Length: 178
Image (cartoon, rainbow, N blue to C red; front, side, top):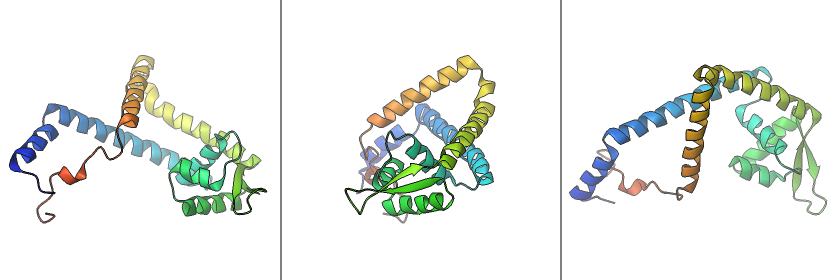
């Protein structure tokens, strides 16, 4: 989709300026912190032979009131069912998850944490807490609370954005992509 010159200039005007610069700086800072947190957690996970994705699966299964079906786990993690199956295979081989056949549907399987999986989650929670404390404790209580409130408000706002709210068709294109 080609933009007219007036539309292009209007989009550029919105995408530039002090507010846009501040918002971009915030996004960059959040991405940096997210990568820092994930790297720290991944290093601790590698010590116990679990990937970040596997740890997410353990957490998701642990938070379900009843053992979830494999398809439910895939949905919770926002992955395709085949990826969830591969993760469950590895976690089952490690003795952290077990499969339970669904007696009402032979094609369906439930998953649940083993005692080893529950024990590992306790260890992972402690590691995550240590990592989080080292990152955020220096801010002090008042600033941590203020940051939590601001981030919670931003999360709420992001959940209310309509899917596809960024119209990639109207974004300026690089030379040669037109």
